[in-house]
Image (cartoon, rainbow, N blue to C red; front, side):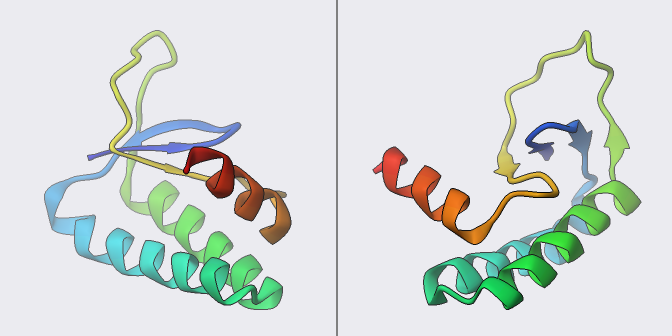
Amino acid sequence: MIVRILGSGQWEVAGGDLREIEELDGVLTGAVDGGDASAFDAALENLISAVERVGTPVPEQDTPVSDLVIPGRGYTLEEVSNMLQEEV
C-alpha cells in the first residue's frame, strides 16, 4: 500500500503492517466524524508516526498512485473536515 502524507511525501507500507495503519486511520476518521479536536490531534500524530515507522519512503522521482492520503502534521480538524466536504 502506498500512503501519502500531505506535505511529506509517500511511504510504501508492507502487507503485514496494514492492519495497524487501517486501525489508526479508523480512529482518525472517528475523531473527524465526532468533531473532537483533541482526539483528532492525537490520532493524526499516531497515524503519521506509524506510517513513518513501518513504511519505506518512496523516492520523490517515483510517483505511484497513493492508496491512502492522510493529512500532514499541522493540519487542523477544521481544515480536514473542509477538505472532506469538498470531496463529496
